[in-house]
Image (tube, rainbow, N blue to C red; front, side, top):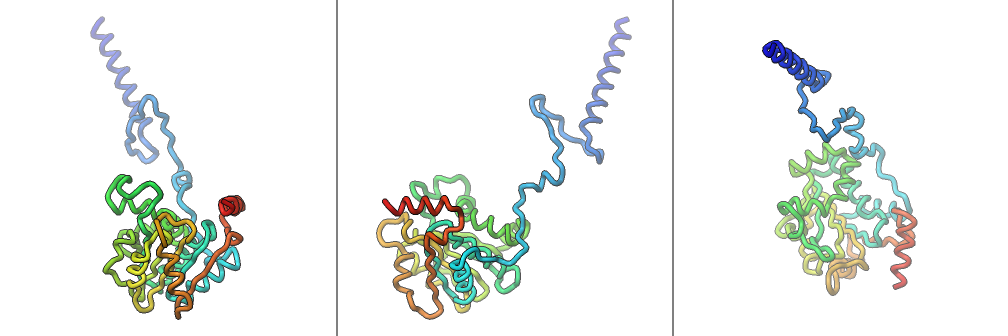
Length: 265
């Protein structure tokens, strides 16, 4: 009697395990990991898996304002363009989108993204990871722009193979930007005059360089490198200085209102 009861339990356990294995197999017969008792597994569809990929813009860059169009024209015409003005005017977006178009068309071979590693209250050392991982936080905005214009896969490939380079401004010392390079210096109001001079003297023949920043939002003490460059380079041939105003803010009407309140202080 005990043997029959034991054999019955064995058959029941075997049947239960076979049923579990059948449930844990997907539609193609591949074995899936057993779920945790407290976790509900959801088989995401292909559409859901790609829902958060940034959509690629297939249309050419279009200006939202007259000021943006003048800025775009200047970048395409001049070797060195300085875009100064408040946040939300599209300085970084226009520069990043034009760099992406130039790379995709083959007019350039490399995009260099740089900015001074200066922040209010924090430094790179407080962020986890190696230096390149720390600095990636600083150029996330440009990564989003490039992914929108080129596609995330293309951007990842270019980053791995040196077609897109992102590095702190201090790493630019000793380099020369050649005529197949599009260089963007962002947040330039946080440079010192000495850093700005070092960066500007990297420019080679035919190189396309864009420098962006808001002179009034500097996190460095004393006279910043962007303001100094604007004063020194004014009226220099092949250099264009474009100034955005609060009326050119396209991010949102609220940003314009906020800037108005802060300007009253």
